[in-house]
Length: 309
Image 1 (cartoon, rainbow, N blue to C red):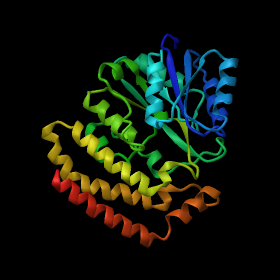
Image 2: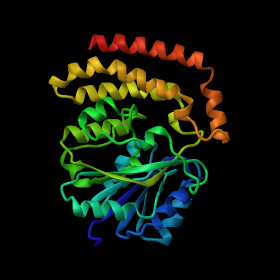
Image 3: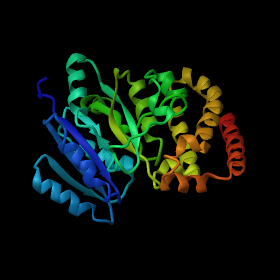
């Protein structure tokens, strides 16, 4: 394997300084050496800056960008703008790359030169990266078709941006970015954009990234996630060609019900039963009766909105 392909690792940061050193160390540990790492400080009020500057001083491949707080999508977009690499690796400031990730995906790009986005598998972990654990959705096969993204995302498969290895020129040529109109589900919207632009997807069926689950994950906030899911759905509806809109309308009620049930399912949301995060999550999500009432209210509201479109 040659290292002609330069990879830009984009690390958006907002008040996650306690995790940042472990995340940046995972970049340093990569066996593939032709990378730059752009640390985007999205208006953090903790000691993110001092950590970022330390890494930049120790290795010139680290770059530091500071901007007013604008959210995760805004920070990722800023990193894309600053990047000089041929391919982009997204890495949230609490996640981890396994040492061979860049090397394996760069090798796949060599073998399949027409690939626009290479997707790896992943594992979940809590506090100790050496004790990863899986949930159902992180183990299932990916459906990398447009219909898969529209109707099966977060229902039969899902993967976080840390799995991506994206050709930058494809994003630039097709004006694809992370939507700043939504604070969650931006990855769903991003992948639908790529699929609508006929991106060539390639799957690496090997877990090359670790996605951290902890009590402050926004996925644990059911009302927040549901609200942004609704916003993302209408943004995606507007992206679709007219001949696909009707089918999307007719199918979306089922998608909502399945997705929201997943949010309310303790087995899907929480961590190991003996962890503090699990206990906190369980306290937030119970009682189930209230969750079912919430689900019914949301579904009625969605149906009214969809029928008006």
